[in-house]
Image (cartoon, rainbow, N blue to C red; front, side, top):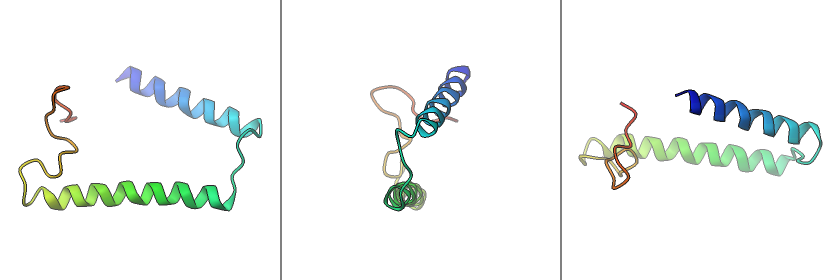
Length: 73
């Protein structure tokens, strides 16, 4: 868990530094793309939730895999 928090803090700091250095600019198109990707993730999670009513592992987002148990529970 400590690694996840540290990774998140470092990613946030890196993005803040890149934004402060004006390497990346926030344009209306960039905003639309980010909002669209966030909406797609929410839609994917809702589809997975509804599919859990009909399929044992939904669409497989948090199912067991060859990499091990992917569930956070």
